[in-house]
Image (tube, rainbow, N blue to C red; front, top):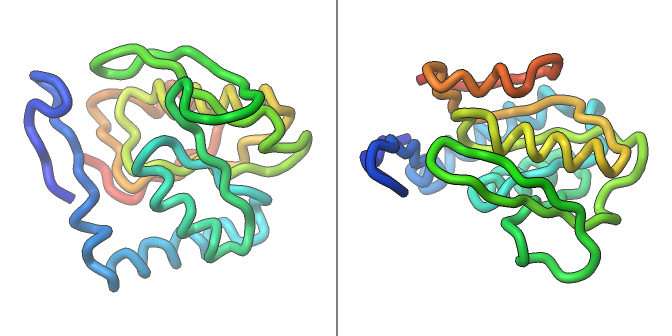
Length: 163
């Protein structure tokens, strides 16, 4: 991982995980580790735009389960469910196809970074609005000083690296 200061806005220290993606052996170890911990515990992986798509799809493949993308507003065709949320430098809306999840499905929510927790909490709300169950939330990096874990109180949260 590398730090990118003042991106996407002044004062934000962006945690870029693209160097991890470029290292095939490290990416494989990461995907295998996450898949090992959740095998048999989830029916589907949900990843948030955009970096959560990359890791989420790879983990879903390793687990032999489906993958559901959560996107910014207006990016998905068809019927969607949506939620407004606040992140560390702006506010936004997330959407997911309304028929992407089924009641009772166990969902692994997966993203690269847990910062303030707004995106992850909003994603959990979308999952639950569809009647599915958040089995766990998984992150590559958690920025402890931003307190995002508190937004996910009562949920299993795993972060591989704490910054």
